[in-house]
Length: 149
Image (cartoon, rainbow, N blue to C red; front, side, top):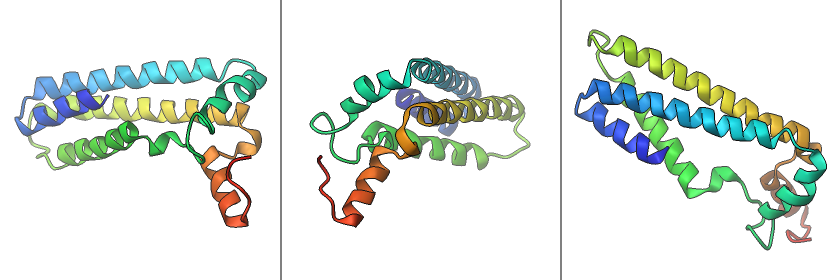
């Protein structure tokens, strides 16, 4: 996603509208693939998540309070997505290729919403009390309890 975001941002800067449209289509495809993986992940037994998956996101495999949003690649993706939206928002609405680009952006935003819903489905189905590892860690820190149990 980050490479495609880089390429698409460069295409916006160079006014290569066909490349922009193709970049948005590719981003949508990548989001749809990630969503399919999340839907698959939310479809196995909650006990498998609790016993096999979630422990890989806790010490000693990950730092206390692990969150995918703290991942460097995720942070870069978020920043570049905002930059792309801003760059496309700054364009003149009179530019002729923008109707197709606006349509692709709408499709991409819909794919992003589906992705967030799929992630939420995993959380709702598999995460005890809906508390993320980051939230659990923060709560422990505030209450003075140890972070590694």
